[in-house]
Image (cartoon, rainbow, N blue to C red; front, side, top):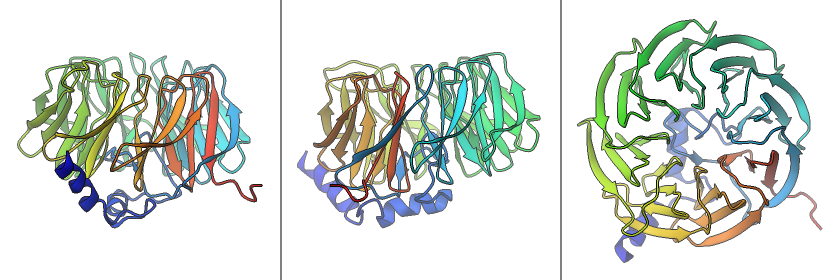
Length: 383
């Protein structure tokens, strides 16, 4: 354990309040800044890392209610929070004070986390409709119909948008007008968000395969057998993909060789991993339905530490500087030390949390099943 802790300390020695060189480079390459959290995992490779600063002691700044409950993760763009409700509305809310700016009616429940690319919000609903909505006005730009519910969040493939559906297809649509560019049939539901790297998109689904697809023409370049079905999204860093399975394992896949490099499974607790990992060069962090957060060595899969949280974790963690933030189905939002795994901040909502944190502009936003959206940050002129 000592040598793994030393590895984390050495690798993360440049990280200071979310502005470390290592973490910053990840976002410079992805093209996102401190004031933006455009999609479910924050960047195109789904690393789950924010470059924004957060105060040592977060304070509750505001709450607002969303009808039906919240399962989707918020996007933050131009000082606006976008979040889907189980009442079928997409909400646009002011980041500064929580005031509603507009809401847009979809055709069914929204579990898909919205993504914002080039002034347009993209998301799907349980009725199988995919929506493109103008971010500033809430007016619909176009819609596209699939044959299954859409939980997958959308990623950008340049001039196209990529997402999966429960009709077993991975879709690529024109951002301009929603025209179908291509679709790729898989052998199971697609729940997670596709990651994008070097002109390729990667998707793991309920058929138990990680597929690498050419974004230009939709041709499948390779597939890797993961042995179990997957509800999580795959994070990509330095030519490797990291993903959890319902077979109780975290896997590391070498994308160049198209093979599984290592598998991690807790020696005693056998529970699925539904949440998506957060990844830096110093560690892979993921929460499990075993009520634990796991930090693993990215090269070997050996455990750096585990932290018991007392409740199942379907929320995907976010790394902010030298801390990790995550929600639990016990209704808590937690902050853990990245190197040690020790808990240093807790906020109890009283309702289960399956959405993931969104961090931008010095604030953390997360929603709960009872439909309350929370915003934390540094309270000004606090008495």
